Length: 161
Image (cartoon, rainbow, N blue to C red; front, side):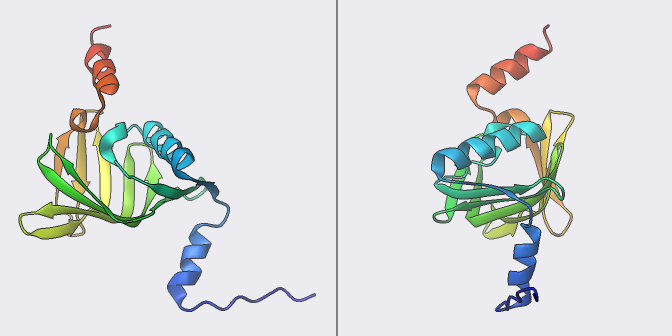
């Protein structure tokens, strides 16, 4: 019996399906929220660094590190602690490893009057998070700027034990 052949509208459709082969996928707001927080914790990032809302699908391919999070609609968030506005498209993707998200898509930061894509996010010495643009330049902020109160308490008291 011959294998079925699938026709794709374009090459990017085929690549998107290939990237997700063998993925663990969760659906629904509550399950996706839990999944995204667990992923951030596993990578070492604070819970508030990706404040995505109304998630409908999240997936992860452990073999390649590819992850994605789909939301009902695009979302903008203002981080008061860093005075930064960030835009999240309906789908955010990245390749992840401990303390790093790279080849990110779907995240932009407002700098002056321009929206600048964020393509990488790295945790440096558990103290700072560095956000990199496609031009290779970036900005770092204290990791505590993205922590909730419980995380801040643990972080600030960890050095006193």
